[in-house]
Image 1: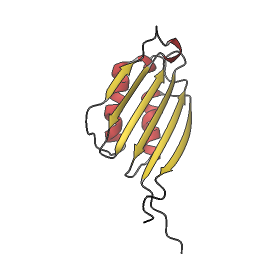
Image 2: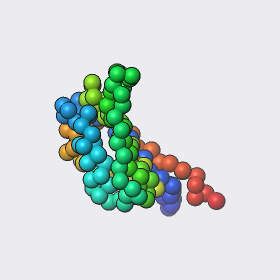
Image 3: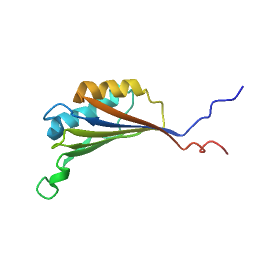
Length: 129
């Protein structure tokens, strides 16, 4: 019987299309998402979330927010584009990751009409030695 390979980390990449109108530019909403997502996926914060607004005059195609929260287990990162109601979210952990918990929380918070998901195992040879 082949033993299941242990990997260093897990990364969930979510692209959220046609999110609820207004959430992509709502700094408080995105801060709250990062803050509450940590507990929702059963992880621990190292520091409070940070969220930044992109200058819509200098970068009109990139108007939106970028933010992240540092975790003991790694991080959660969010980027929004207000004009198109698009959000990309990266959840990276060196611990366990329940993809369904994460996706359901994202759906509840941003109400996207469509989500594209990619899951990546990181450090697949980390424990080989």
